[in-house]
Image 1 (cartoon, one colour):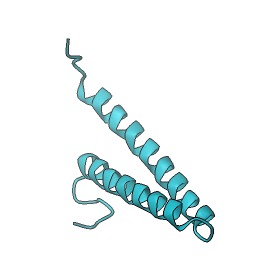
Image 2 (tube, rainbow, N blue to C red; image 1 turned 180 degrees about the vertical axis):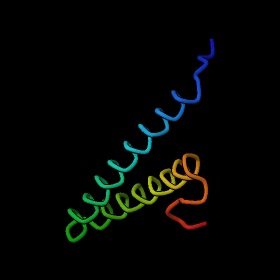
Image 3 (cartoon, one colour; image 1 turned 60 degrees about the vertical axis):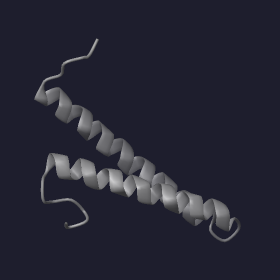
Amino acid sequence: MTEVVDSDELLRRIQRARSWAREEEGRWQGRRIEVGATDPEAAQEAAVRALALEAVLGVLDEIVAPGSSRGGG
């Protein structure tokens, strides 16, 4: 059965997702810096993951505040 949520709950869920994505992006950026000199392959993977999370953040930001995403669209 599909759960029905109101707009306030949907906004709360999007905001939680934004918060999680911001934290994860920072974590992967830190990982990239941490292993950059010693493990280029791991640094590359961390950079790719951080970029993916940046894209997710851009989409979520655009949903919450159209026209104000980090990409400047």
